[in-house]
Length: 91
Image (spheres, helix red, strand yellow):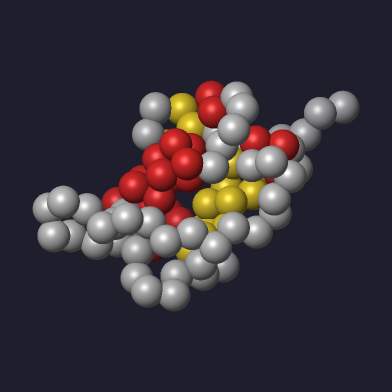
């Protein structure tokens, strides 16, 4: 739905989000920022707005809406799968 262009036409990424310096597990927010900094090659403003996804982008944790898990502050667990889907498209 358009996000592939930001990620060099890759639909699936196997990413390990680095540990935080405060001893806590990385959060979804950490993962989004890491993805933006390390994997988005063009137009990062189309992916994040501040430290969260832009309107029209869905984030799923293990196939459940991230809001059900605690939103951006959810601490990622080993084996969690994030799915990021754009509901917006060109016409």
